[in-house]
Image (cartoon, rainbow, N blue to C red; front, top):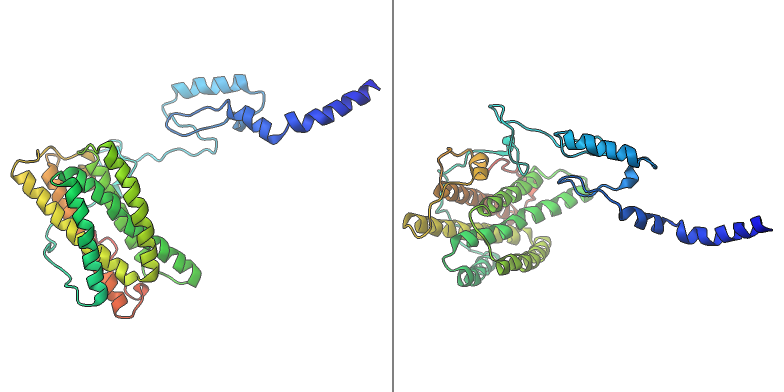
Amino acid sequence: MMSRGCTRLGSSIGPRYLSTATTWRTLSNDCIKAPAAGVRCKSTVALGGDKQQEEKQAVGAKDAKGIVSYWGLEPTRVSKEDGAPWKWTCFRPWEAYSADLTIDLKKHHAPATLLDKMAYWTVKALRWPTDLFFQRRYGCRAMMLETVAAVPGMVGGLLLHCKSLRRFEHSGGWIKALLEEAENERMHLMTFMEVSDPRWYERALVFAVQGVFFNAYFLGYIISPKFAHRVVGYLEEEAIHSYTEFLKELDNGNIQNVPAPPIAIDYWRLPPNSTLRDVVLAVRADEAHHRDVNHFASDIHYQGRQLKEAPAPLGYH
């Protein structure tokens, strides 16, 4: 009788107190955060292994690896040519390159068609509030510019990737070329974050601008890729103008020509004694290359062809 009552009690309590949700709440309150590695839960350790876990923590404290993975994975370790450890995790030595500063900075695509004129004046209209907001604060202006400039390549690469999957066809290397552009623009941002200190409202503005621009460009690329690439081509022309003004301010002494950030020296393989001016020259050259790539992509579409029909200019920063 008593055992039958206990059975009923256990059956009524069991689902409530031994449920998955309750167990997860109990475990989640007792998680271990590995150094710089996110969260690791005790559920990955054998049950009843508190003592074993403490021993592992003690060993981990002595271990120079720092990050312990349940799956047996470890962060890759890369060294420079001289054997020194590679400092950066946002890019690798084989992704570094020397900027081509001989590129023609004055090339301009004269808008001839209605679509070209729409793209041109859209970019001109976007420049006005930027000039009004940042005025001559070119460090923060460059920071804001790069948060926007890194979006089109990623969006274009994403849509081409999905198109390639849907149609079971290759992309002619254009997916890689556009993602390469987006990565290069992101590295510009990582560089300028070392020399500028954006204010809180400028950081908030990045959220707003990126949200609007990403969705607008996504929709624009679906409707007309040739218009989308032409817009980016004109955006890059404006970027060249902005960085040219940046250089004038540096040459006039209005902006201090500080030493180049170490990340920039390693990324563009600049001499150790390089300055901010050298960095701006390299960034401006990159923007000129992106100008050419996007105007080229738009021209392909204007000829009634697909991007896959023309091999992408891979490695053309």
